Length: 72
Image 1 (tube, one colour):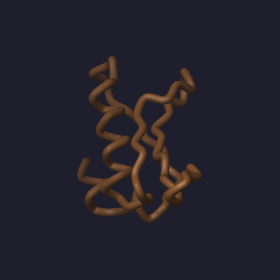
Image 2 (spheres, helix red, strand yellow):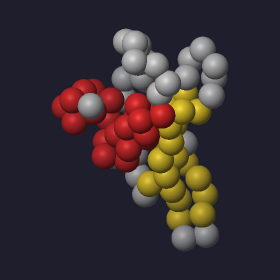
Image 3 (cartoon, rainbow, N blue to C red):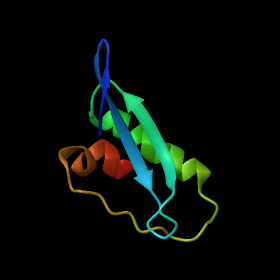
Image 4 (cartoon, rainbow, N blue to C red):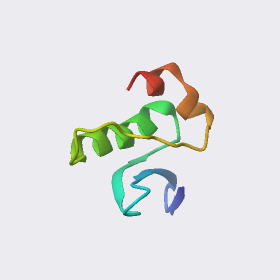
């Protein structure tokens, strides 16, 4: 998601819980590079309330297919 700013744009990365539809992780960065998307995902993992296995769905964009993202 692109956010218009006076100085240009920022990019908002969100991780949403599919059951509750709540945002469980987010990060605002200068771009949608993998490092910024990973920050949102790591935040979601830190906030999780279960120790059970998770199912993660993405839009299969390049960021989500990267080695860095897959290693998280």
